[in-house]
Amino acid sequence: MSKMHLKQKLLGALALAALVSATESGAQQTQQNLNVTVTVPPICTIDQSTDLVLTFDLTGLDDPVAAPATFDNQADIVWRCSTGTAIDISATPGGSGDYAQRLMDDGGTGTLPYNLWTDGSYSVVWGDPLVDVATDYISGVGAGMGTTVNSPVFGRIDLADVENVAPGVYSDDVTVDITF
Image (tube, rainbow, N blue to C red):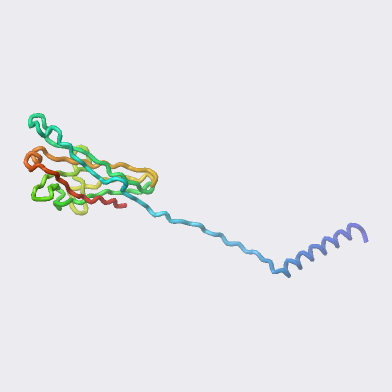
């Protein structure tokens, strides 16, 4: 037998042995793709580290000539939402039940009219247009849960209303909701 012929027989025998060995062990293989998914829901929160407070400074009230016609102030609603999540921030009318004229009270019989606005020009009352079409939301878009967004709300009290109430501490509770 030639060397070449011997090599071919040896290689053939090795291949046959490998095939018999693999078949006898029962090793087989099949493939399937694993589809990995996650659904990330929109998430929003109002920053609860501090209370939402809007306090009016009545400086100048004691000088009728120099007193402003209105006492204005603003507070920021601090919130976070998932990136790109569109939101509407609504407010209840407070204790008066009337968006057109909210009322603070002194815990007794005294009340002091005021209102909340969506803008610094005091042209749109802040509320819930689904409840009162004369009001509007404060709207925004989330920048990610790691990024806070400050949305201002503007408050106003008329001088004439302040001049006609008894001295005391007046307050109202307004519920703030974020819809997303």
